Image (cartoon, rainbow, N blue to C red; front, side):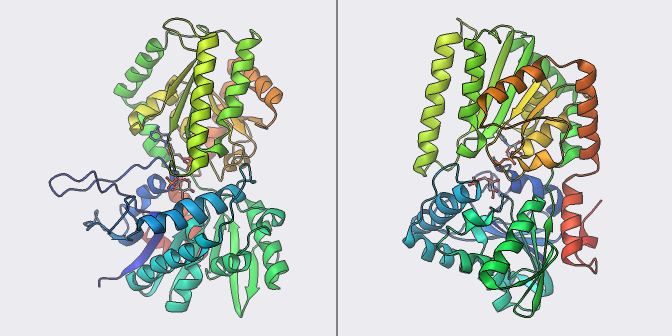
Length: 471
Ligand code: ADP
Ligand code: G6P
């Protein structure tokens, strides 16, 4: 088998195997942030990506995409139930997001999670060339770093967690907490979105494994040193800026505004349909502003874009039902004929349409209850070429560390959220411009390529891996 010097391991492959026509495959833009974000780097770097195609059953035969080799992992219906819908998305996901929904501990799921992690690890161990690098992504594959180390002690192993890593009080609830920690510590570098996460893992390894911790960024365990640190993920800033500058996108933005009835203000939210995103709290705040007469339909419209997600998990189905019934209620009570109060769209959009939507939005409302980073907030800032527009941002999104000039808010506090929305709607244009310029300046120096370079340079202090990244 042909081996690569860089192997990325993630639950999802970055391609859609349905998009094939005449034998040609295209990059997939999944509704999740990871695949789209790494696209900019890996398209030009000779590498292998180990992941799942998104479809149940045997692994499809996928051709290379440019210099990127696809290594699909087959997942059966039972694998998906125990590993993806079960342990990953019903145990780890809610627990890691502040337990805003109850985490479910089902003993049967663990065996499947471990078995599927082993399958990913074996594929990665086979795909990496001697002395190469394996970069493992996210909470689905927390056992993989250690499993690769057992098979390939010669390679460099990185692990990056895209979601929050919880404080000890929450992590300690996990029945398999020791195995999960040991799994991650198989890596040479464990990366997180925010510094607090590195602090949390340092505390946990000292407490549960008796590891020696130096500062917040070095753990000594079983004769090895594991580095940890915060590497806030970003977006392909140039791509979003180029889209926003396109004449057809600007025309489309003007068209959207006109289709919305040329309101004075457009509020926009764009989320995967997930209970962490705070969609219900946001709708409550908006509906109370309408009820109190502080916001008027015709003058102001709200657009909520939501992509259905993980619908085989009951909590996600129930959430969608609740949101749709609430949108129906708000429109029933406050809308007029031809003038809904909330425009609700559950459709995937291409990047150009998203850029047009961002340009149409005077106020971007990003209010997750907890979120690893939130790339939508960064996309909005990148799309605001004229430095207008307001970003209302949850302090519990990773992006809040960087966007200190956003209108930050605690989304659990509905009254506070209402006040923040009004403040953003009524802000002085000069203040908005100052805030947006500061956020855009920050983003310019912190794009996706810098994220990857910073992570990979820390992983391999010799610069062997980072040298392969273009730009
Ligand atoms: P998460 O990874 O939790 O879904 P992020 O905000 O970090 O949240 O990333 C979401 C990504 O999905 C963004 O790149 C965003 O542009 C994209 N996205 C969200 N909604 C849509 C949609 N309706 N159509 C296409 N892409 C979408
Ligand atoms: C988050 C996770 C990603 C995941 C994405 C979409 O961003 O960190 O790992 O791919 O959500 O979720 P899905 O379950 O559709 O892959």
